[in-house]
Amino acid sequence: MSEITELEHRITAALDQIGQGLEGLDKATTPDSSEVDGLRSELEDERTANAQLEERLRSIHAKNDKKLDALETAGRETREAMDKLDGELARLRAANAQLRENNQALRDANEAGVGDAHLINKAMMVELEALRTTRAVDIAETGAILAAMAPLLNTTDNAGSETVGEDA
Image 1 (cartoon, helix red, strand yellow):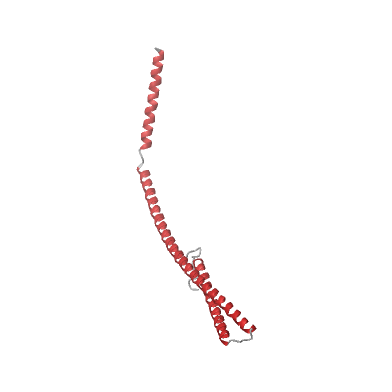
Image 2 (tube, helix red, strand yellow):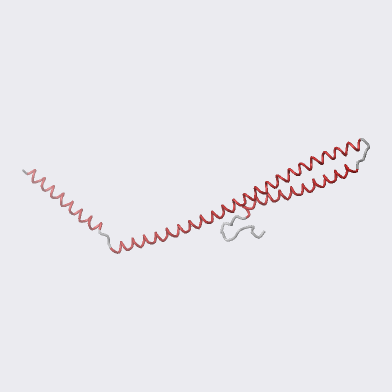
């Protein structure tokens, strides 16, 4: 019987401890109104900060889209400049081939002792065309280089306050 009494005391003590724990839990879970107000204020601050970050993110996306469009435009311009350069190089090759043929014909005529004024005029015209074509190739090559460098020249500086090379 003493064991039963002892077990009753132990059970009663355990139930008392559980009761005290529940009372402490009730007190801990009942928030203080100033604490709730503080948490609400912090939540509102976080929402404001989140909205600001989202706006900055939209702004960054807009800037990146603008830069991407500029790079795509520069890429098109570079391709166009390279196509023009290729065309001018083909013209130069053709003019040089014709110049070599005419010079060979002139050498052959001089070896035969027959000076042909028509061949001389034709050679001079072809040589002038080769010089013009060489000049056009130089211009096209310069254009291709500038088109390729345009994205580099139009990048913003680290401060983001102005664009380099816009007025140049």
